Image (cartoon, rainbow, N blue to C red; front, side, top):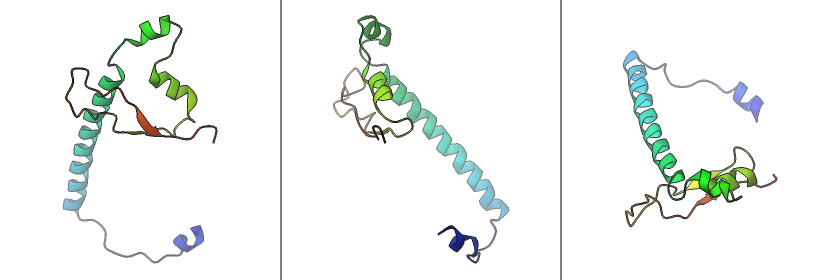
Length: 103
């Protein structure tokens, strides 16, 4: 398939200066949303019993167990920040996601 794309004719026109400016603006806006979402995910991860207290019991948090269990870089969380009842903890306490385990 790679050879097909190497010899594929180009199409379209180069981006204008205005289109490039808009691209930079869009990228800035997307990064801001990503940072906001990352902060919300971090708040969910820190909800409930503190990690240190769980570890002092000889246990691991769900996030530590996931990190230990799944193949690195394959975890794809689903509805991590979903809180339909708007409870005080900011989370439903349910962790859903997709990942690979041992390939």
